[in-house]
Image (cartoon, rainbow over all chains, first blue to last red; front, top):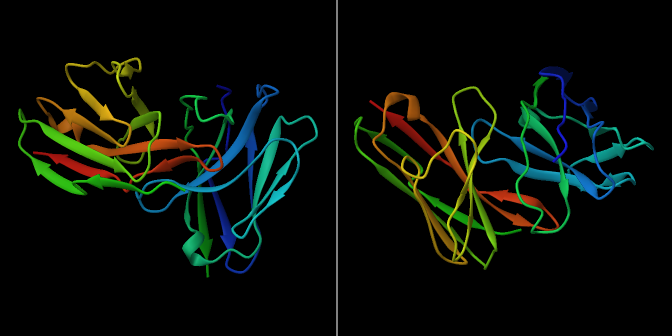
Length: 112
Length: 113
């Protein structure tokens, strides 16, 4: 599995957009980008995933660069409850794709 | 996404003893994964458990210390054996679902005294 690089921490003002970057320069053609978040030592929670097109769901948007070497998770209107550690991983899509490596993630702090 | 019931949610154990953590999934899955998260750190994969075969352990983790059972496609256990304070961590199980990638249990917070 490709490895990812994320900034260790970021701050965001409540109500503003939070843009969390991730570098995955060694991603292979059949690997997807997945984002998770972990709030205060609960189990990580799925947010969104994508292959090469931009994706949006009720939680967030995912922007993937054309060369697929990096991506950005966007929380359009951050709230205090979005304070969490955000993890970006890359992996195959199939359920038998196997294990993935979690990096250190980005600790997002949303401030009032 | 899959619903995973993990228990116990937390425990405080004496050094030298063992603790077995259980994970029950609400539907059949091929692979189950066990992670450890030490205080202030990211998730580290301990092993991958497939039904009907021996678990595959990652570097630094051995079966004698972390025996795993996978008796069927909806259940798995992880035992932390002969515990020391260094084993104090959160232990998480997860399963792999195509549309959502990994779904995680709520975790077991283990403190060894």
